[in-house]
Length: 438
Image 1: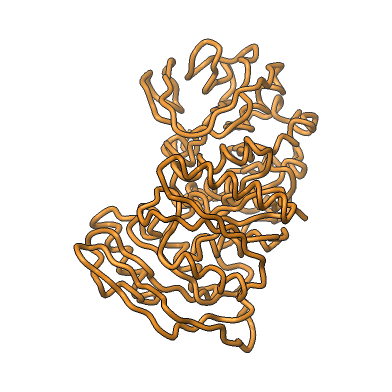
Image 2: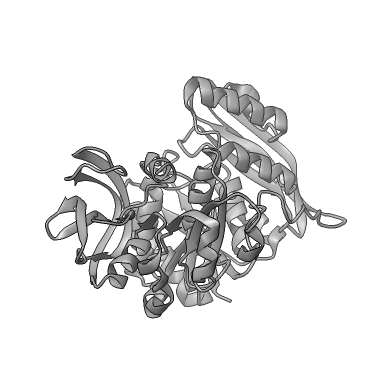
């Protein structure tokens, strides 16, 4: 069990990320950055000084840290806060509530990499409307604490997150391209209760200000109130009904795409970030998926699948590279295979290539240099990188993207085996669609 610190704003995303982290790990502390700048690029600000009551309600220690909220400079304050949390609480990893913000996620990843600790983003790339509904199913009580964009009017301030509100945001997403979760800065939230709360929060007094589609619901007085018990949601809510099923029992079902989880252990917190987004993307496109940890994959099982995807891992996770013998089946497999990031590294190593040091985090333009059924014709595309290692080109493979000594994508010259160093589940999801349709 790993000791973790949660970057905590008191909003729904950080609270739910904490909830996820507590499923199999120990949350040793919450970390709140209190920004003097209400328009901070990195940190939530409405009611930020009230995270202490939420921490008491959850029974978790809280570390608060000041910041002036100056763009980029505030990152040094975040790094200092994480350092303090390591010293005081012995944390080995950081958890964030990032969903789609590459700006925020990449910066936290870099800080964690520099401090040699894990970084988990268990909400990463989740479908935002489905996520909001999951919050209701799991009995979280959430209010809107700030709005900062058209067409949100004053009626949203202090409003409870309900199915009706979610339906309204779904329509606004279609019409105005807003982020329903508010990660684009459209709105902020504050959590009053949830399954990890030992007591619920009751607001006694509040005020609000609003002008020109910008407003805040300011909590002035509140208290903790006892609760009779915790509601337990169905264990199957939001889960893949095929996940964990014995592969041999799938013989009489139609074939599907196998997602191979390369994370350090089965059902790790990293699976939410590196495997589930691929599964969810493919299922939205109408494909059936099953997930197996790489230690569970046996050659006889592969007959049950049309295609195979080797998923990526966290920056700190290279355990798969210590067990390359478990991937010998790749050479004999005749099914289409796609390796993503760590998955590409595995394919390269199995075919005699090398895994080499190459750190990259964030968005970058790369060059597609060869026409293929996966990436299309030569051109530039923007991709999302999150890796410490790259590969050399194995014998029998063709380079599809990147520079001579910087292989971004490759293809076996005779077999439908592809590798991409970047993460198409974050940018360029059409690549997953193309592979699934091969």
